[in-house]
Length: 392
Image (cartoon, rainbow, N blue to C red; front, side, top):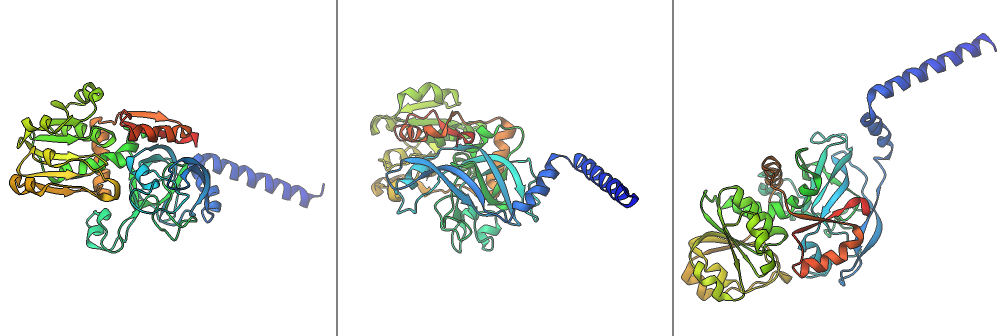
């Protein structure tokens, strides 16, 4: 071997040895970030379960997410909660839909890639996505942390909303193994709460937390919760944790012992309006999580005059019927409420993590989604189904 060849070989060995040592010192996350840069410009392959039409039967579907942009994070989904909104949407209860569509807006997982401008997350962090993935970020609502009330074009929902950057033309949700989202719309999930418990807080948690915080109730106030399912059971736990006396109203006698264990002072099994009469004018605030139209007036009468009644459950086509004779005599303030902004969603996540307020969940496989949907509709959930995303 000539000296030139020998020297070149020795130089090559030295360089590769140094490079190898450098990679070892860099650690696995940096190695991942370096190799991942080569794929940042490519669409992300995803697999999940989608509704193909308004029949609402979910089936496996392979699709693509947009490439990870400069301000995006890629989240490997670990758990995805099932919300009644998923069922309403895919079945067209709230209007015509584009299919195939992947629902799911209670998403918890691990960050596996970040865009070059991202500062809120690093690879390996726990992160979640709730009911929205974008907004204009310019209007007063967006600037004040109420992105869900975006005034220009409305928020971009996590699934089923037209989105130019999505390869399928619409946003696709969390019944899948991954998601790409702008970092602003991802929620930090503290290490002190398991991802499986964090997932339902991203819809059920914030949807009930926000309106209760807005009424500024005091310790000892009497709060009524109607409908003790996925949302309602979290509402009970949150109100109790804040010092309220909680009165839970349910049509399911089989839930009574569970609801008492959540901390409710009293559980009222409602068979008819007669069951509500003893509570007329007794409550400071009432929240309804019922996702279908129901006879509301007898419940509204349970609130003190000038008190507040908030409807968060969204019925078919959004239609509710209220007897105005009752309203003019009880002077109760009626309103609806939609989730909460990103700061408030982070607030409820941190609050629940700090105070060990966990939803009561049932972990299911992806193949069990259709059965779980039937059970949700039939009031058999106890109390939030959460999909193990490793089964997609």
